[in-house]
Length: 289
Image (cartoon, helix red, strand yellow):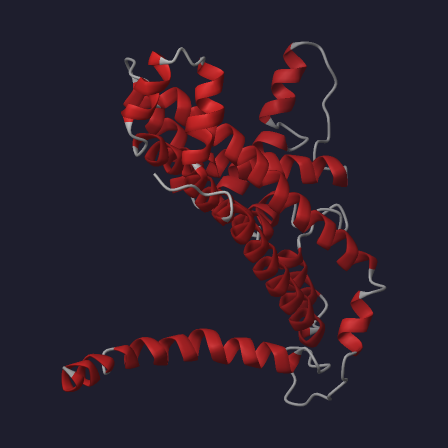
């Protein structure tokens, strides 16, 4: 058995090599570059210590991107889970056309976020935008929806939530269909009301599904990139940037790869820590069937 186990361990080697080359090495290289002033192109650079990190403490653009990242992550998570759970409860019922509705809700997930961003751009743009064309029908003046940073952040959060709500719906549908009917039958015999069934039976037994959905949505929202680049490019100014898009802007726009690496590392730590906190908090509320 020991010889067989050693032989099986050989099959781990390709995976370990790939993981080291494409994950471990870039991460270590990024950490090193975050302590330099490299511009991303030059053959030479200098070690600048923690100056890139101290600079972030007074950089208003980083502060705005940090707040936006939290809004994208938390806002999208709340919206996706509320809408996803509501749709799952609806689509868990038997009615004509249920499969069609499920397909329509999940369909946006299959569209690349970058493409979705461009589609939404033609919807929200000022000149000949679909939304402004509808407003014009009612005699109202056109609105420059993306000219205001706060409104832009709200729109981006909504677009991201509506595109990926299908993922939450599927997760919750699987969770609902995994709850044994005997619990509801016993509750019906005792005269338990629908709201009480949801609170004391459905919700506690859905905690594993809620944990999975919240974690996936949170990570996706915190690393939001494609939709921002397609819809606003981080503008106006830096008002709708997330930390991910700010890394791109800092690296290629400002040619400051060292500072971009520091921002990227902070973004990585933020996503990792928030995800771990949420997972641990949600796991404590799970119950066994």
